[in-house]
Structure formats: structure tokens, C-alpha cells
Length: 362
Ligand SMILES: Cc1ncc(COP(=O)(O)O)c(C=O)c1O
Image 1 (cartoon, rainbow, N blue to C red):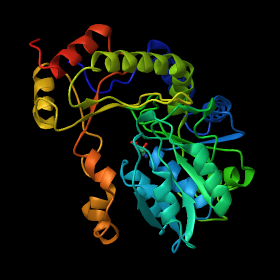
Image 2: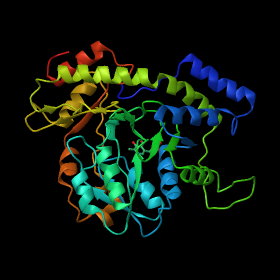
Image 3: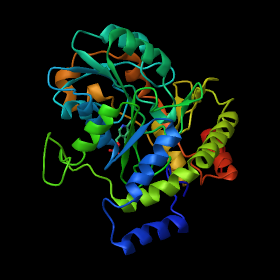
Image 4: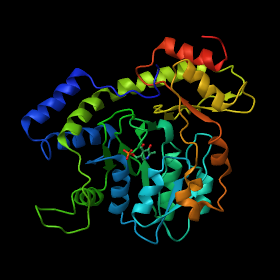
């Protein structure tokens, strides 16, 4: 079986996790601080705050920027539900915008949807593709609004050689399928000392000193076993991302002449780290997307649709999304299909995937 994702835990990571367990210092030991310091250095920001998961990172980042009921936050509808849910968790309103050819937020649509209630823009670097973040930095500055990057899928991705998560307040997920993992886990990155201080309070029940509570908070702490694994995962991240990029390039060349398949877009000034390698299956393709998924499965190849229903069309969001039209988003959900290119995928696996897509007998 070629799975769509495969976390890597080597002997060193297993030993590091065991060492923490044996030490007895499993929470609030040294590892979380060390992981924060190394991750901040990697992203190129002053501060990083470790959090229990990516959703908690988004929620805490929004709260640290004082997003509250009555505020609007501009988000893409083509994302994982956590992007919008984290806004709802603050009592604020997600305002959904369409996407561009890069699968990321459409800057022109963002401009149209900014109102006097807009407090933040939260783009998603979807599939590991950096969005046009420089344009959003300028827009946020012009309108004096906050920029929070949902970088849950984009560890190590770059825009003009600067890492995503360093343009605004960055939020990462270390869920098991991500480019680096702590099984569950998350991180906030920022250059703003106040945001860092507030985030640290919010993740630990608003507690600056033991059993003294100054603000409302949550238990969003990361533990030292997660951090010990994360520190070693971070060391491998660039090498793993490079393998993803190499695999993606090869698959794109293998699929270049397949009628009806659109391969992922890349841009000279952006480093796409291919958390997902996502093609579009258009009506010119020899069969339907659903039949292709069956053919891949019959050949022991995992594939997945990220995401079959846009957030504004989810039942949960029918009050906001009912009369909303986001044509590009509504089109691509019918076409996208992600294929395995993670670091454990070999050249022969990519040949096999391409042959099945071409309809050749395996
Ligand atoms: C775009 C996006 N945002 C947020 C999240 C939430 O992260 P987590 O699953 O760690 O809570 C994810 C995770 O899958 C994601 O893909």
C-alpha cells in the first residue's frame, strides 16, 4: 500500500521520548522551551509559543490579538474547518472569500469583503503553497488590520526567501500527517512581545504565577514528550521537504501530457513544500474522479479529496453561507484529488501512480 501520508518516527525520536518519560519531567520541563527557541529560529521570528494543537494555536492567536464578538475575520472557505471554527470560538464572524489558481485566498475578493468590522485577515497556505502573502501584508497595513497566517500545512514554505509564519502571526499544526509532527501539537510564531505574552497566559489558564489567574484562558499546553519529538522532527524538516519537492516535480513531469489533469502550480518566488500534491481532474479526463479513486485503491494507492465540501456549504455554516457564491471554490471541490508524494514514496511508486492515472494496466 502507498498511503496518502506516513509519519516518520526513527529510533532517535523514540529514545528521546523515552528519556523524557524516564526523567519524570513530562510537563513544563526543558524540552518545550528548547523546541520553542529552535522553531522561532527556524521560522526567523523572535518568539514561538508551543500549543496543544493547530486549532488551539489559531484560537489563541486570535484571542491574543483581542478578536471578540462583533468582529469579522476574513478567511478562505476552501480550507480545513478549523480555520473558520477558530474564529467562531472567539465569538467573531468568519467572512468567507474565494480562491485563486494557487488554491489560496483571492486578494481581489479580500479587498471587496473588508468592512469597518474587519479586525483580521487569516489566509491559509494551503497544501504547503505560500499564498500571495506580500500583497496581504500591504493590504493589512493599509487598512490597519491584523494578519494571522494559518500555516498549519506549510512548515518551511517560503515567499521571497522568507518563511511563512514570519509575515504576520503564524499558526502551525504538528498533527500526525503534517510535514513534521508531534502526533498532536501546534505552534504560534510572532515578533510581537505583547502577543507572545498574552498567548503564553491564554494557553495556561491565564496564570502568570501558580494559582493566580489574570485573564480567561484554557489548557492548551504542549507536553515535553511532544516537544522532544518535535525538536528532532525539526532537524529533518528541510531534508523531508526537499524529498517532497523532488517527488512532486517528478510526478508533475510524469503527468504533464495527461489530458484533463491539471498539475499543481508553482511560482518562482514561492517555495511550495507540498504538504499535499493536489491535481485537478477536469471533464476532459478519461474517467470521473470517483472512478479514478477506485482504480488507485485497486492498485494499493491511497488518495484523498481535501476538501469535498467548502466551509461555507457545511451545515454548520448555513446561516453565513446560504446565499454566498464563491465560484472558484465551488468548482475546485469537484475536481481536486491529492496523491502520495511524502518522503517515504519512492520513484517506482510515482511511476505506478502515473501509470494508473494514464489508464495503463499495472
Ligand atoms: C489549514 C488547517 N488549519 C488548521 C488545522 C488545525 O490543526 P490541528 O488538527 O492540529 O488542530 C489544520 C489541521 O489539519 C489545517 O489543515
